[in-house]
Length: 359
Image (cartoon, rainbow, N blue to C red; front, side, top):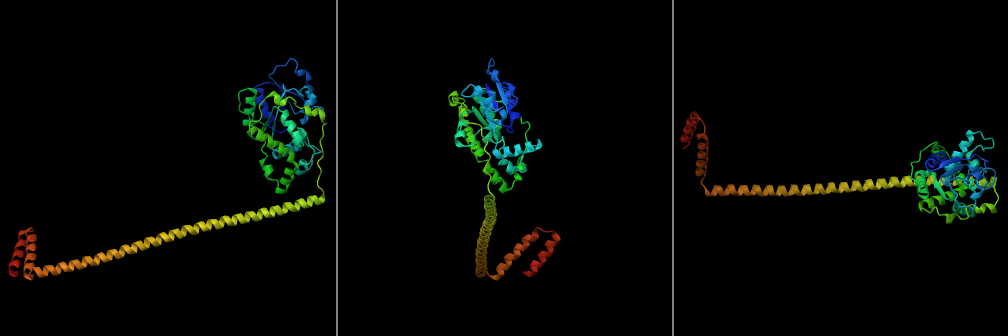
């Protein structure tokens, strides 16, 4: 038999939709004993309830509704956990909607309030020994922050087909969590230290696939409950001096954090300016090298121009020495005559007379 130990505000509606596709689902009202359910019932049933959010044999608790679950690994008890801070905020506003008169006025006091929602009370896991017993007694414990992977893992253990988890009654509390000051968040996290230790251990087990479904691992399932009594210990509230010291330490940490953020910002700005300086220096160096190369090229061109001019002057002087001046003029006139030969007849006549006169 599968047993859904439903802790309030841990995606119970979505989980039940998946379970309904695998098993015949029995919803148990608080305080109802179901010892007769096991007789004649097949394996394909699942019992689900808040079970007063507790393991121990109080009215409506798991061991009260199903006393035969103790030491019987045939009962596969599973549950899901939620991030403790997210779970606390969701539980607080859920109870506020119900107008609970005994509810503390602020969420920080609620975290230090002995309420039945937090895991140390709902799962009887206030110390390391109890947390170890809980982890050994449950068939499976999932994580609502990755509920799809958790339900797929459970399907593998049960030999059921994986099913997409519908998201029903999902509330977004991120904005409410962001409204908490760093001081409030630190106090809440200190108050929820046992819950965080259990939650992180479960996440490690999920990551390592430590839940095997083996009955041998649950041979003493919830047997530790027979040796203990249900206790919800009121937390020891800090004194006024302790509160003042905590506030002072928190204020100093906040100032140190702000100072470190300023230093980090300045360091990033300096690094950015240094990179900019290196880029501009490199660009200036490249421009200087290009200018120097252009200057060398101009000087080389000027030198070649002077050489060409000297060669032309030398060639002209050589021609003057080899040929008399009248022969040079005659040669030039012949060139002119040849050009005029390609002109019209009247122009040729005029040019011929001019040429004869010159001769």
